[in-house]
Length: 239
Image 1 (cartoon, rainbow, N blue to C red):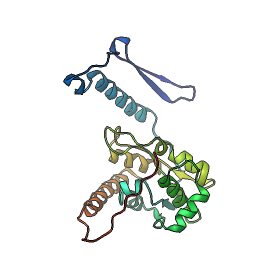
Image 2: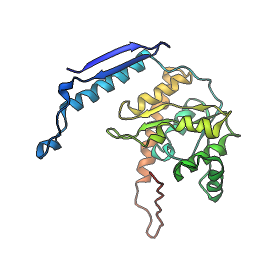
Image 3: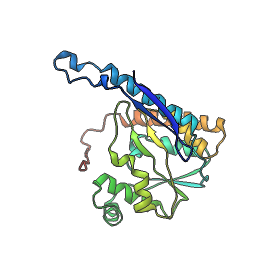
Image 4: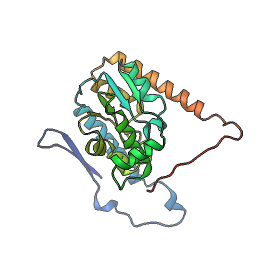
């Protein structure tokens, strides 16, 4: 059987390791049976998820200074979770500032402030962050690990808050939280974020419910058929 080992690191954090026995290393199979889920892999994935849940209970997120005004860059998560975070922060009594729409000026700013090896969407995100720096106390940049159960996001999205701190934000604080829908429901992520900001439990839970409802309404509106003759554009960056 696979073994789960949980220990504490030198700094007191709970860490763990799922260690499968060598007998689990099955040779690759072919034919119809190869399309079936590997029960061993499913079991290891479940154990890994349970370990992450245990770590969150044993190592709750540390409180962060409560900002008066939070900036939300108009990119990446802004479109995947429409109205979610604006509604949530507003429900906590925090003023929200969203960067403007992308223009030629945004693209020119991106070429100045962003890392050369970033894809175009990432460069534009950095430009939106830069636009907010003089207007807010804190910029919200989540660590995007999974926005769909069973799928992982681009590795650059996992390092997004770190890259923003190093390359763009500089002296402006960056508020972050892990967005990992493969491991934690979105509502739990919002509740954890509210606790980090020091809001009361009842206020946080109400803000989370309102935010999720606003997101679903925005997604339903976005999914309506477009008017005949409207122009649709798809922007793709390099992998």
